[in-house]
Image (cartoon, rainbow over all chains, first blue to last red; front, side):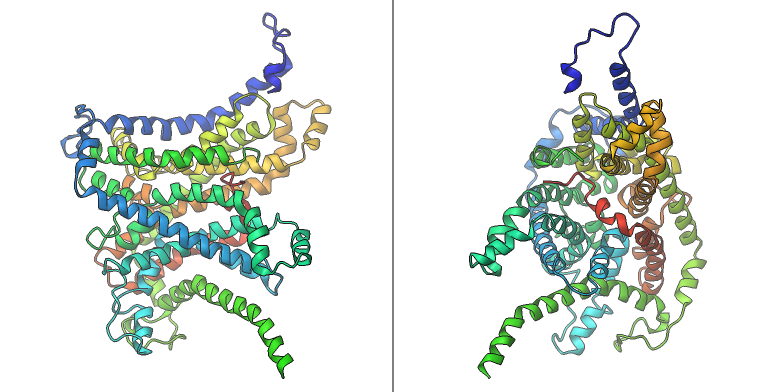
Length: 308
Length: 283
């Protein structure tokens, strides 16, 4: 802003002002990183949009494609098999957010109270976040293994169930397994951000509320939640986008199965592109996903605070 | 008597909270316990209904077996190399970017930050399609170069945003002192800012390493065989191939894959919160 207000007068001839020279150096420092992003994100992204309007088919070759206008998009949205996949995406995002928010908030509230070993708990809670997705998904698959998984063996030994529960091969139960695993993986992110929000609430607010006769629940509704609103707003927006884009967790856990029960739009895009080699068609799905998420992304960018 | 009951009732919420916390901690930590439990049990005792919380015998056989698999050690080393490369070079270019964003005052800096945030929100499954085609044409499929470039798509925005946070939180007075002594801004970066922020920069590099190490999608699509494949993809391959029933081996491999990140986790303790909130996630 200062740069704009400053008159350009000193930059006469070849003599640059200190200020302008400074700005130039600053912009030059951006170049390496932005250049890399242009090559590995910008260019592929534009190519992806371009190819979404083509019949690009990998088995026909890497350079042999024709423009077919909106053909892929029309085909995708007219296909009667499409709505269930969109519904799966919606179910996945909505249920993930609801579960992860609830558990993240609970953990943050629990670990915001004074207690012994609090630092230890706070560190342990974060481990799933650094654990590789593949490791997390495989260990949960093993825990929930139908025949030899510890959950089924214990449930049967305790006599809770007679038959092994089909945690991953039943089209309804698979959602529970997937959501529990995903929550395990992503709750730390919610927890840390919510805890950071809780720590900005001044103690005096609660003291004042207590004097006014507010109980625990009252002060939660009238102090905690209003204070958390900004951070929860951006969290929900960002997580909507991230969960909708999620591939690895679902793929390693279920591969979109059984029988497509957990195939979200992101999973479908991968399958279309790399199992069926329909690059053009897959690109149109990916672009559709991006367009559907752009509202959330736009709103997120408006709400997020820019200062570091 | 009545008073005692009243006291008890008052303490109930406390007990309830403790019980809830205990349940949640078990949910979070049990998978790790079971991972060790499975890896340390003899393979012969894997398929048994006589399941015990504490295993009868502890053996290291499964680790020895997985380490004898050339496909495992090879992909493990591949992942170490590619992750280190990704961490090193993204930290280098992002230090310049972040310093510029935090200390220079030209217009359009917010736009750059927004750009980084947008890149973080693009679907990986969309990006990987054209990346695959372009890399296939350039013969970058199944190469360390290709993987390192692909990992930059998420490592650059992350490192850029996190480093910007570090530089912004550093007192500008020290640099001003350097400039009064006649340094240019770039010289202050080299002689004042970098040495002071070295711990932060190392932390960002280690985070970059973890992100690359944990990647699955890009490595799945952009590698073909064990000459460039990462261990994440190899573990997944075990679980879906001839080893599919050998859970001792798979889980032992998973344990080993977790070791580097847990070690880094301990180093990064003090930076974890910054790392998690680095997306500029301030409402």
